[in-house]
Amino acid sequence: MQPAMREMSKAARDYCEVIEGSGLNGKDWLKRVARLLPRVHAAVAELAEDMNGSGQCLDGDMEARFELFSHLRTLLGERDGYWTEYDFSRDTEAQSGSLADDLTDIYCELKHGLRLSEQGMEVARDSWCEGYKVHWGQHLVDAERHLYDLRVRGLLD
Image (cartoon, rainbow, N blue to C red):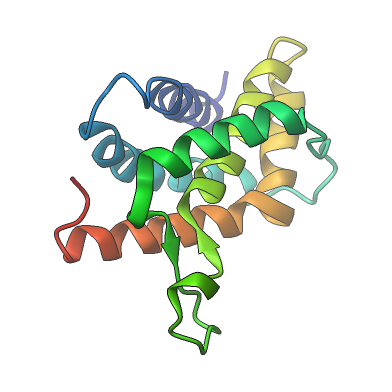
């Protein structure tokens, strides 16, 4: 296995394990997520650099996805919502970004790629790269930005 794919697989496994243990790890789980996302980002960016886009897009289990989203949203509480750069209202009910949504979509895409790796690493690589370019890459950037903001404001705990 090439080094870039090995790093991507490891980062994906580590991220999925942290998300799956979110109810067990107490307050430290969000700090772990904040440390893992840059690793995932660097790994997928390296992997996707030469890809043209021919992977399988994820068509996942919406019920399981919503269950994870609801769990993470409850766990995050007031730290969940955030403003995007194009938001104009300052009404907290109108916040358009959700860290729980970002983390859920990233998790589902990474977990899907890990399952596909059983069919072959090329299949997993293509799925991760295509999904990153068309969907979860924006969630990754948004989550990293919001987690940075939480850290700077002392709210990551």
